Image (cartoon, rainbow, N blue to C red; front, side, top):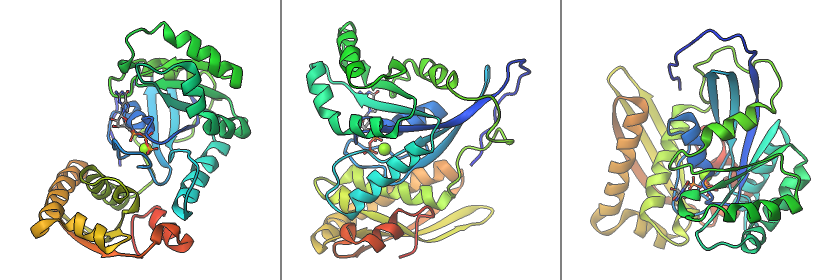
Length: 317
Ligand SMILES: Nc1nc2c(ncn2[C@@H]2O[C@H](COP(=O)(O)OP(=O)(O)OP(=O)(O)O)[C@@H](O)[C@H]2O)c(=O)[nH]1
Ligand SMILES: [Mg+2]
């Protein structure tokens, strides 16, 4: 996927590097990636454990010249099955390769420092073990009226780990994202990562098509269903005028299949309509989307199936 950008002459040298975005599930990592890039790459949901694999989004700026390879990662949590273990391993792997780590946490209006530290205890351990320069981004500050409370929170986190900077942000309101980018940039080496300033991501459109179908399923379902869904692309055919996508929605139980299809197929129709519109926005063409629902009993605890489902191309079981 490419995006055109204005170019301007600058005397400053380019700084470039990889930046891992890590944190608990649902703190807003994917929302942050999308906000930083100004385009939707990663799917977002109100429910935890949405992101299943790392997603690259490259940020470029001419002023000052910067290339940051942001890597959104699955939420760090205590895994309960093979899928959970794959998610956590993926996030840890990305961290070990990054020049800078941004630990994202979120805040609610009545959170005390103690509550926040307790919620992040495992994540803090993981970040400490990664031993990388780490910035702390406190997200969702739009939910906090009294911002002076942030000082005691910062102190509590600083006691746990020597964070290099502390940046309160709101990913949805795009508050202070420049501040975050500046803090990351100043810690990156001089040089370039990419020759092509239009490069945004390395995964194919079919991967994002699968993700957009999954996002629609997650939006319409509850409880264990979002965690039990995988989407496999069977066909992705792009011709001059339209794109044909055929995908299988995989669930773990017959009862879940019934929920996803819905009475008279109504639910599947809504999922299909939403996903089709999103895919059309991505490919900027008309899309013909055909969906099936299949049961793969207990796939989330089967290492081989998890590997197939979380791999980059978005398809093929
Ligand atoms: N109020 C508020 N909500 C936010 C903000 N950023 C994200 N959210 C919401 O938080 C929820 C989770 O966002 P995601 O971006 O999917 O979170 P994530 O950290 O990627 O979650 P996983 O992929 O499950 O690890 C969504 O409902 C977002 O709209 C913010 O700045 N303010
Ligand atoms: Mg995510």
